[in-house]
Amino acid sequence: MGGIAWAVRGRSSTVFGPSVWRGPEDRPEIALTFDDGPSPSTPKLLRILEQQNVRATFFQCGMHVRRFPQVARDVTAAGHELGNHTDTHPRLWLKSSNFVLQELQRAQEAITATTGNTPRLFRATYGVRWFGVKKAQKRLGLLHTMWTTIALDWKLDAPQIAERLIAGARNGAIFCLHDGRERQADPDIRSTIEAVERVVPALQERGYQFRTVSELLR
Image 1 (cartoon, rainbow, N blue to C red):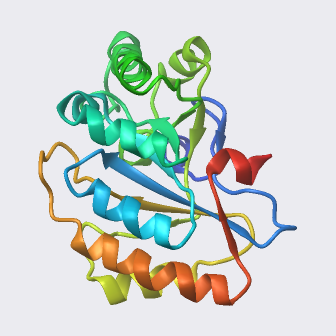
Image 2: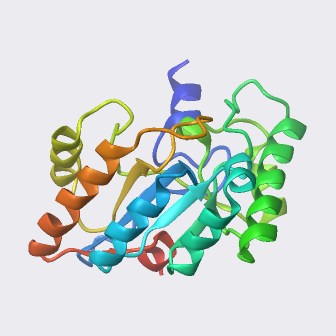
């Protein structure tokens, strides 16, 4: 039982497809990533990142891209990287290979058609992969991306999120935050935004630079 649990959720597991969870450890660089968007609050986050001169990677859900197409376009227009976070944010485990493929493909099509950018990165919902993910990744040309530290920003307050991320800072780290909340159309992400305002300057003072995931892995 422990083996399958690690295979589906382990940060370094590649059992269900190519996957990364950190970048090179020889450079003081960190990747900020945001899941579950876009949302009506994403523009507030974009303004903060612009003020901090930081680019990030946004793993977007197809359903939210269709809901908020202009916000999705604003993310890429600001120079951020787009990733695939499934179409409807389902649990992928115990689902058929065809279900998995359709979820990834619909999101891929929505993001590409709306923004003009085709994702090359994918993050499974809840970080859980399953049978069929490898086949879907290969067909769509996607690399799965886990994280070194997850912010738990859907349940912690801003100081706690900031403390968690600062404690997880190291060369090559990938931070997972959220500019949406699963399927919610208009979630409250104030804690996430406030945490980013705290974390980025604190780590920049320590000499870290922020990159997109693809830049981190270069």
